[in-house]
Amino acid sequence: MSTKDLRAFAERHRLRLRRGDDGDLRFPGRAGEICAFGDGRMAVLVLEGTVRRWRFRKREGLASGMEFIQDGDTEGTLLFDPSNEEQVRVAIRISGVRQKRRMAEKDRERLMNYGRQYQFRSDAFAAGTPARGQLATNADSDAAGHVEDKEGTGEAPCREKA
Image (tube, rainbow, N blue to C red; front, side):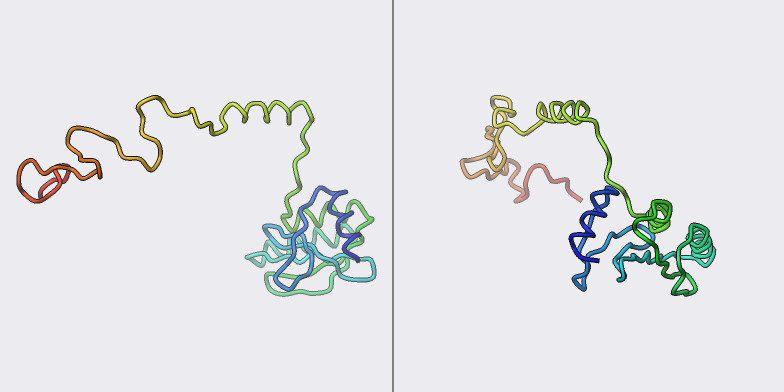
C-alpha cells in the first residue's frame, strides 16, 4: 500500500499514523500495531503478554475472516482486507489502536472558550508579588538576596539545627 492509501485509511478510521524506527508507516497500539503488508492487504501484529490473551485475539481475528500467517507463544500476525469493515474493526480492537475522538463543533468551541480564560497572562501576578526569577525583598535580606545571620552561628536562620 502506498503512503497515500495509508493516510486515507487513517482518515477514514480516525487513526494516528506514525513512522516506526525502520521508517515504515504504522498505527501503534497498546497490544500491537497495524501496518501495510503488500498486495493491498494490511497486517495486524499482536504482541500480547500471555498465551491466553494471544489465543483469544487469534480466535477473534480468525472468526472475522482474517488470514493467519505467524504464530508465537504470546504473539502473532494476522492479515486482513482494509476494505472489509468488520475485519478493520476487529484489527483495531485486538491491536489496541486508539481512535481519535469525534467532537461536535459547538463542544469544541465551548472547550476553546473555557481554556482561553485560563491562559497565561502577564497581569496574572498580584501587585507586590515578585515575578518569576526575582527575589522577595524583606528587612532580613540585602540587595543580592543574602539572608542576614542574626544569631552569629554561621547558618541561615531558616535551617533547623540537628
